[in-house]
Length: 488
Image 1: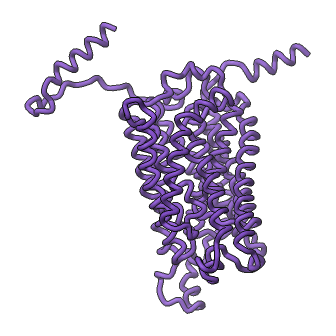
Image 2: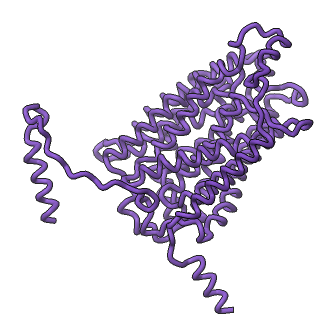
Image 3: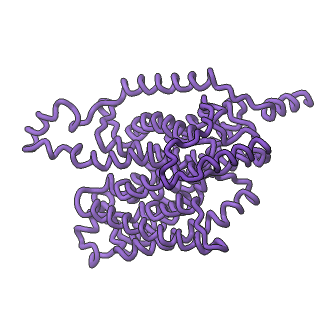
């Protein structure tokens, strides 16, 4: 018995091996081969992307190609695509020695995730029961990007502490869980969640936090020297922030119905984002004795207006209501970075690298309940009878549903999202604890050199154009700096 215990202890607590020379290529090739086979069996073009479009136009008396949904949805798809690959990727480049991994691993898991998402969402929403085929079009691509966002949010909580093989597993299970919870929330409960406060942010946030809790590293302080930013890494992260901030109205309105719903979703998101910036700056300055701003707050809490407005974006929340949402959530998120994140790590053993709890999990949860409240108080006087039917899709088996009942289902949908995120994250975390995935040791986290070929830093070269005013005394400063480094 003692020998078995020793063997298990050595298996789970032995020396970490970060060599992924064979495991990473094997997993990538296996997953991509599976995608090729499954796409060959199931995926087909829909009627608007198939070459039979000309016949479809004739049969349905469509007079112009401009009525193809591609021309309506593609601008939104472009914006969402930029958010997924540029916005999320660069937002996580704040760590001083982890920028290659932040952008590169974001690229990897999004590229795999969107393929798996097309299949998973297709099986739930677009599978033809007669032919057994899934048809995809431009809206399918947008929804696939949304599905990837949940796993990318989870990546933020795990940033610097896991291997690329583990991240592919996080994405494989994350996309699967997302497709199931989305089907339950949007189809079975018939909730409205255009911008994904519930199904994307709340789920992705709690999914990543649960995995991080299971993968708790008691000696992570040994990598403390790298768990921070430098001037240029924070500037790169602000690129991600600005891309996300600018394109978030497209994200929340991308799949809403044509007409007033999409228009209203963009306006509400736009206003909530603007409001969250001012309150973030206010609380960040107020929290420092000298009134200095913290770049962590500006990079993250300024975005919570978009997260919290996701569910209610297409509702008649009113412009001033949007400002209130951004105002309150900006305060909550900034206080989260100041007080909640340290509390979680100290007392709950939850190491959240990017502060996903404050940017996605809590604002997503609040966004879901805000949507529930706004739906519950909806009335014909505000929406009109036709507007209520259009906004909440009160048709078919849901034709007799009242706004109050809809509000209850919206709240239930938020709870489902939290449950899937936490329970699913714990289960996936237990799988990732197996010591076969090539994750780094506690003293080797937050470092690109573990998984990347990193070029050596170039030596500083004194500037040639000394006659420019702003270059005066540069030689002296550089030589003094080099001297002090050598002496130390």
